[in-house]
Image 1 (cartoon, rainbow, N blue to C red):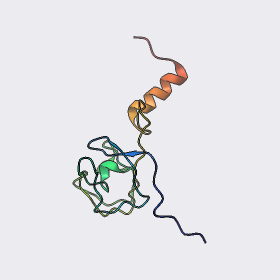
Image 2: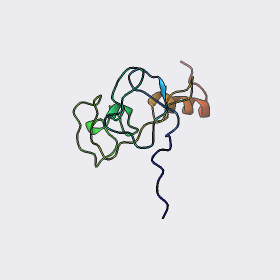
Image 3: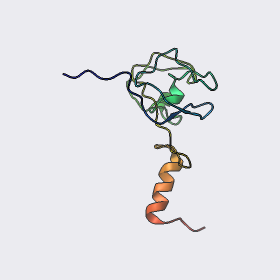
Length: 110
């Protein structure tokens, strides 16, 4: 069985607070902070499961409740969300979904 490379980078990511692009390791420590603004990186707002409209603001149904979504936590389900390339909306956002629909069916005229 091959071990997972924990030093491998996630790829294109960005801080929820300052929106600067980051290179983050696959495993983000609870003490890791953004080099630009100092915000905690391992927090709900940087997680791919974060959804302000979902129950407990999380799409992972087994995750424990976290009250402060901008502070570091111990959630086992944390996965850094992907950042959108310059000029695009992040995947999974309502704007991105709307853009895809308009691309398929054409923009609705009002």
